[in-house]
Image 1 (cartoon, one colour):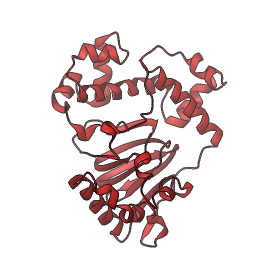
Image 2 (cartoon, helix red, strand yellow):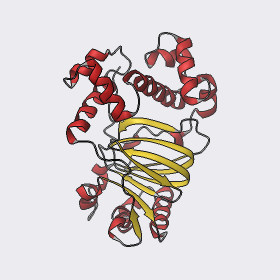
Image 3 (tube, rainbow, N blue to C red):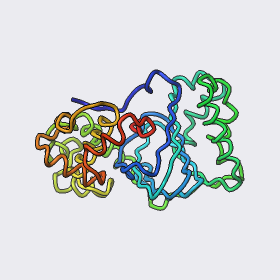
Image 4 (spheres, one colour):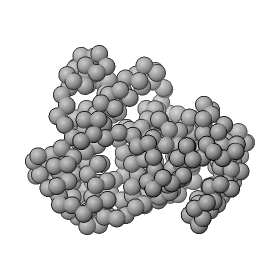
Length: 283
């Protein structure tokens, strides 16, 4: 079984909105890349986010724009998020939007809304999308105000708290993550991962931990659990079935790993969160 960055939103929609609530047990997400442009509004709490492996700290009210293809990981603290995902192929047909979604100036932005106008526009924008499925055809002015907020003096662009990595390092990491995603449920060796980017196994481990904050196999286990969560939310299936589908032959080890990552057993997670569309945050 292979996984990859999705190329279309569910149901062919031009956007996908969900709210991540405080009670969701997964309060972090490991390094991955987003397949679609997104706007995130931190409604409450705090959030550390790494964009292309650079750290930013967000507080309640801050807004984050993430371009397609951005490497991202995050950790939340008692936080609640509004997340709005765009399908650029649909939005590109709107007059005036092309220069927003393809502009190199807005690859990724953390914005603090000093005057609150940005958050108000975002609330109006999201509210309109929810009330009318065709609202997106009339939202160009709100979208421009949100996406280009950093050009107005009322908004502060939050600076990165860590130095950038080189383009070569980011390219190597993307290559390795692509290999992992394509073979997530198979047995990958250190030698195979290191060979993909021409490094020794020893140096590869140091490189991967420096870029992601974890060892390669800790990362793989976490990604498998994230995929298991997605399956438990979407499907009625037994713990054994899901364990096998995400690459665990030992069900006891799967339960132990799942509980360590999510703070509850797979069975409890499934009974509590099955069908909770607002928690589907894989895009």
